[in-house]
Length: 545
Image 1 (spheres, rainbow, N blue to C red):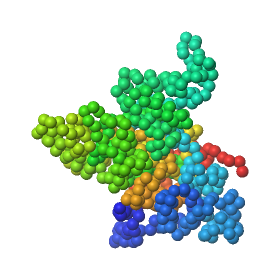
Image 2 (cartoon, rainbow, N blue to C red):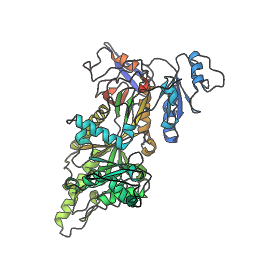
Image 3 (cartoon, rainbow, N blue to C red):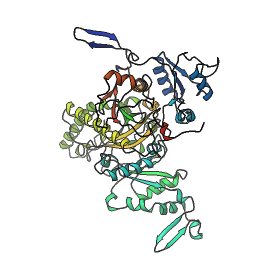
Image 4 (tube, rainbow, N blue to C red):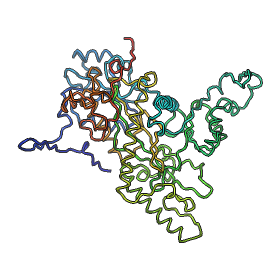
């Protein structure tokens, strides 16, 4: 798919003046301070490596090192201009004073001692388990909503139970009430089946699942730290939960999340939205507006008896799982949110035709149009869409909700430095997953640090290239990662940053007003901007030298 992005393709800029207009070739470096940047690239996966290399190649003042991070001694010689010939710090490096070093690599490849001592920047935060672990995410959002009952997160996050099975595998004390206790090392319990031990450990969750309010719900069971849809199950009864946990005993922390039903469909397929979010320093948060729409491998079909819950490929929308199925096709199942309006209108027309056919017949034979049976037509649970303009307005509302939810998500972690600690000299990309139901309500499912860009595929490769180009513009072309620069907080009374001119904002990386695009980054919309107390403390952590 060729790129139509004005960011990736060369373009001219028209600058009006009082007497005439100036037309000039756009340069991504025209407004930045000349400087030298050394990129240490340690990404294990080729797809993303090639994208980052391409973005760096557009900048002649960037030097890319792929042999690993320079040593502290190399960096010290670099700062004094005394690099030894042949040393890692000297390899291909421009001999320019003020060279900065930026590590772009997988989390496990980052040399954190050099980051924490302020010798370089990195593409990740050290502490972000509160976002990465699904159980921690659910717990923190629950705490935030309890303190802020009017928060959008109260309705934008599915009801979630945390399942901790550690006690089923270790010595524990069970309280049976009335002063009666027992441990698994007691003879009466030592030989109990694992399934029974798990059931004892999770009695609170069992009571919640079997309560009258939740009796008709189905659930998604997900490991807390596993990615790419691994070991996910769709369950409708507590016995199915126990069976799934018993099958994977090595995983001890899970979340049980209410299944969102009925979901909004695209061409008869269930889907979720992958939204890339850029966090810069401590802390500015940007939503990337080119949102991916990832479809399940099988159509969301069901008959009069209900769903086939055993067909995991109609319920799971993870691309990593979808490619396992022979029917998966990248053109069909990996799309953009901007494709949704036309798809919704076409889907509505198909359902209308199916309804007319059903009314003309009495046989009740199933229709394949739209991915639903005639006896349980999806048009009855989806809001009717009558025009393309109406569909586009719906998608606009979805985008608005995504921005609001994302901004509130990071507000929920303010002062929670033990589980999420942004650092003034770092940035990080996250993949946020959202689900939309048939009433167009948007729900946040999970947050993925270090997202797998390769799942985007080759057809939409330009989307990831555009993302990284704008990341470079924001965090590489300008000294935005310099903790010594005080960035404007749009949560303060000075929301318009009036003390900074537009040119000054571009040159020193001052954050724009929430709701506006970042300078020279039309697809990065700021949704949160506030200077955290750790912004000048390297994340509040340090290593001894």
